Length: 156
Image (cartoon, rainbow, N blue to C red; front, side, top):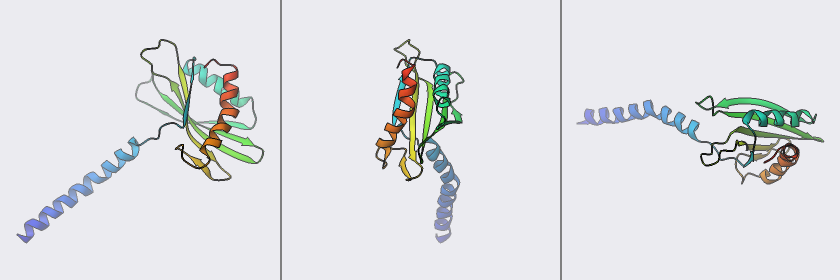
């Protein structure tokens, strides 16, 4: 009787030990935050990317670093990048995603920039959720430095 109980406990522990890491991995990969804010444009993804890079290159205090491409369908990929902004001695980092918006009811070409993360490097504030300290101020900085400049030559 005692050996059956030990065997049963061992079987459960082995099962949890075997499948536990898979559950942890899938849970970690699947968990993503909603964007802090999104901005839509009547441009193709390539036009938006070109104008975004032009806007950033026009200001020596802005830096654009592509970081990743995600998705399974080559015609519907998400492009990720970091934008670094230096204002005086202050440094900020913004994580963005840009892509073609999927809209079934609207035939207009739409692309979108999503602000995923916003960080004040010097003060160590910001984050991936709107409630994080300093995020509202960082969104304003991002909009003034990037979105307003991008929107001057782009219809939204």
